[in-house]
Image (cartoon, rainbow, N blue to C red):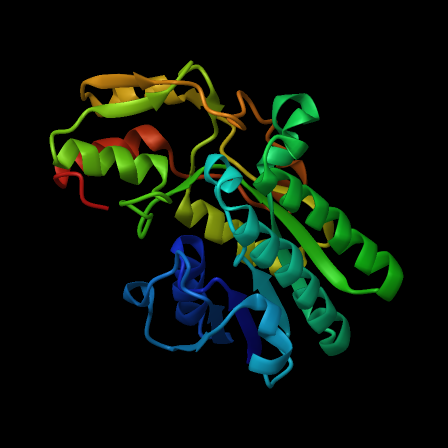
Length: 288
């Protein structure tokens, strides 16, 4: 069996990935998570959980993984202006440590980049501390491959939604946040202008792609995005609640190009759509 380390395995995407990997019975699955946004409630049977920051990877991981999924970085755009120290600690220092660990162990690295890099005709790469850190790290991964010959693939997520999204607080994601507001009969808050487009991609489609890319992919630009874009205002209207417009926020991109050609070349296609998911939420009293 291949030994797989999921950095961020107690988070939204990471826990769904761990659950799938265990079900395939081909992998021995480990999680490294600092529980900044991850939760013990996301633990799944069959995974060995290790608590700690990615910067400590060399001390905490005492085996040589075959594959490392690095999903454990700080991952919010607008909030990153207030969380600059966490962005630097988790993304810059942490990922440098991960890359050194990969270099020493020979593991294949699947690095989760950010589609903000492709936002607003490329201007999104430096639009926020988060976007800058992610764009810089994708280049650093490629540099390590050139310098030290590491084996890697870089993926790009596009507004992932589904089971185990964060529903509450500062780091809640949009679809789960809207579902929570509908359940509590609250206004749906939309950041102005509301015409910003997003390519909402289901967690199961995302996990399908991650495993496929880990096994068969090599290099950069493995986008994992549904080609159908909706504006945030259109999504709020699908939920059907009363809408409250909020002031515009720094770092809020308007569009992002979906670069999924390389992922599709491996045989991947998105199978789910956001409209059906919202209808599912309505039937289940807005519970994810």
